[in-house]
Image 1 (cartoon, rainbow, N blue to C red):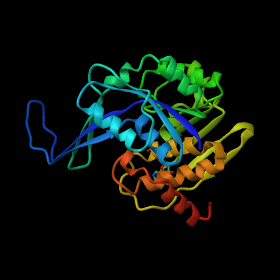
Image 2 (tube, rainbow, N blue to C red):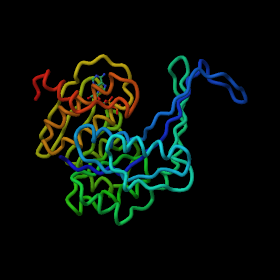
Image 3 (cartoon, rainbow, N blue to C red):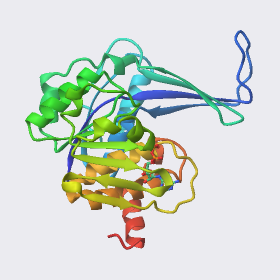
Image 4 (cartoon, rainbow, N blue to C red):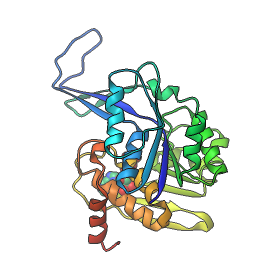
Length: 289
Ligand code: ADP
């Protein structure tokens, strides 16, 4: 069983649906409201766990009413929360308004995620003891760099999902073993990715491709599914890939493509992550396992 440590974000999404968005100073009646636990770190931790890995989460919640609910989401899936700290102030929050036309407006408050500025000795020991470190860019970049450096120095493979996409200092890229990017991120980060040993590019319904050392190139087609909601497909793919990386890139790509495809068949982000048995069934039906 792979041991994964995620150093990353955890958020509560506040999702309001409304026929028409209010103008400045106006009040309108909404149609519905939901609290949806998220954050790329938390979503990917849950995805890696459901894909069969042992997972520890290093992150931060705030001191508000959402903290317990967010902690519970990880714990219920069996993700280790011993390194989930609580800091004063709000949790990471995304306020999302969806109108009748399906258009979104989103306000993200980093909250506790923005306060992930230090890693303790125990956090670093957890990183050193894992097989794979999984990071995204919803916590401060210097923390990602510190985690990645410590991982590399201790033989832990560093997998970076550079999302939300931004330019990163070269010293971060120097620590990355595997990058998982979607097509937009691949285009934006093209030159930085050239020096990353393993690059996996997700291609939506077309599956994913892989480029590795010595010019090794692989591709896996998308699994045909009835798409309901693509939210969380990328996070599901990335967590699953981390959990199966030890089987080699071809097997990991197939597993991640099947998991990502299944995630699109249900509503939600972490709620749509399939169980390992569902993924195995899809792979068996496709003759891939
Ligand atoms: P992101 O959401 O990060 O942009 P993608 O859209 O590339 O990422 O999706 C991630 C993965 O999820 C893909 O590589 C694929 O395996 C799976 N996936 C996404 N959309 C579909 C789809 N319509 N049909 C089948 N698989 C899909």
